[in-house]
Length: 65
Image (cartoon, rainbow, N blue to C red; front, side, top):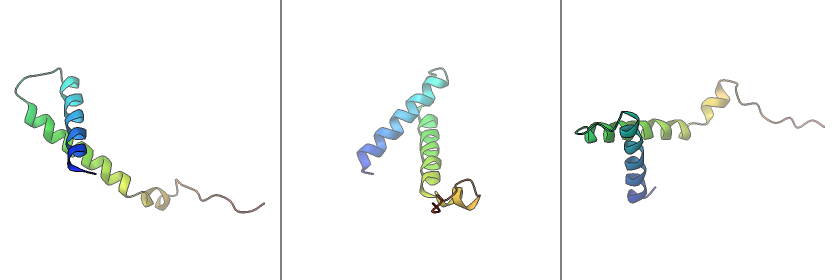
């Protein structure tokens, strides 16, 4: 993802967290760090789809007719 899009994504997430916390002043850096951590966790889950197959939750399609 290009740098500008990544920064925009973090900015939106930080804003969502800030609103959820009641829009307090003086905690922008804290919300920015939370946004980065949240997005990193999401991205890590998205990169490892093999985890779903390993735990048996995803079944291959049947090829029998």
